[in-house]
Amino acid sequence: MKVGLTLIGILVITLFNIPPGKYLAAWIIDSYHYRYCNYSGSFTFTDQGHYEASHLKDALTSCLKENAPLLAKPITAKDRVVYRLFWRNPICFWRWYDYCVNPAYKLPYISWAEVEARRKQLGTRNLYCQSF
Image (cartoon, rainbow, N blue to C red; front, top):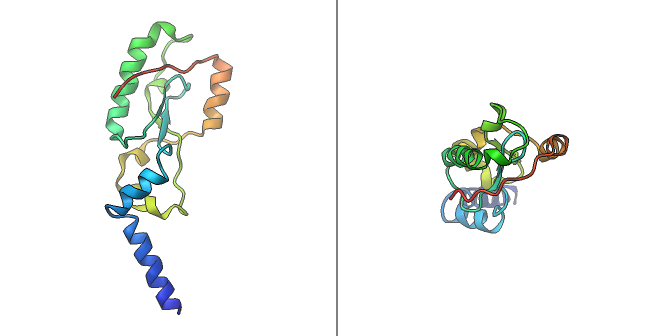
C-alpha cells in the first residue's frame, strides 16, 4: 500500500513538473504568482505571461527613464534593481523544476510588506508602464 501511494505521489509530482502538466498548473494556479518591483516600489509588475527575467530589467530601465520627472526623489542604484515579490515554497511541488532553472528565482527577494512601508515613507506612487 505504501509503495503504491509513493509511486502515485512521484508520478503526480513528475507530471506537474514537465509539459503539459507544468503549463496547466502555471495557468490555473500561478497566474498572479510572479510579481516584481524595484526597491522603492515605484515600479511594480505582475508577470502573467511568464516572461524572461532579463526583459524585466529592460522594462524597469525604460519605465524609470520615461517617468523620471514624476518621481519625488532621484533614482538610486537600489531602484535600478528588479526584486521578486514571491518566495520559494517547498510545498508547491509543481514549481520545483522552475526553482532550479527559472532565472526569476535568481533575482533578489524582497517582501511586499517591506516595499509597502517604504512606499508610505517616501510618498512613492506606482508608475504605470506598458513594457511588453
